[in-house]
Length: 126
Image 1 (cartoon, one colour):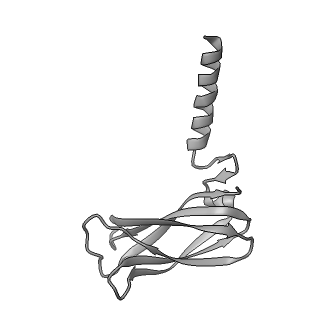
Image 2 (cartoon, rainbow, N blue to C red):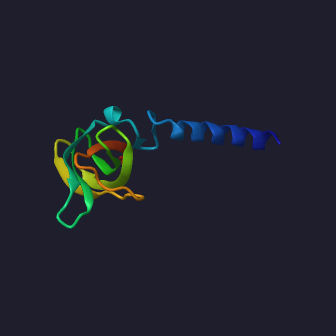
Image 3 (cartoon, helix red, strand yellow):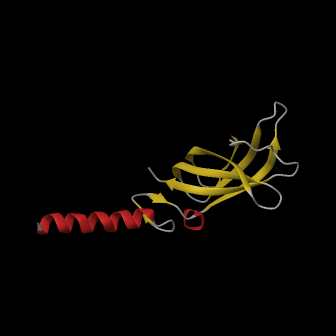
């Protein structure tokens, strides 16, 4: 019984650490400042075929195997109406990367002046 309680306590501690968005755990960093990554939204809108998208640029101070991030598209007054996510792989320090992220919408029309914001999901050294 004692072994079970010890294992359960350790598991709960590891889970709490892994779920904390500002902690580093097992080579995974969830805080953009600690990760040394900077995102810039270069464009936010619709392409000629009508797809909503964000053109996102990443610059990193560190080397990562994967940098996974999310993009929220919102109305001019801040209501999130769509989301997308993607990743950069084999990120090298000092390099700039750029990608087009397609935004998925539940049932909204893209507003005339949408806003896009980027959130780091995680950066992994693995």
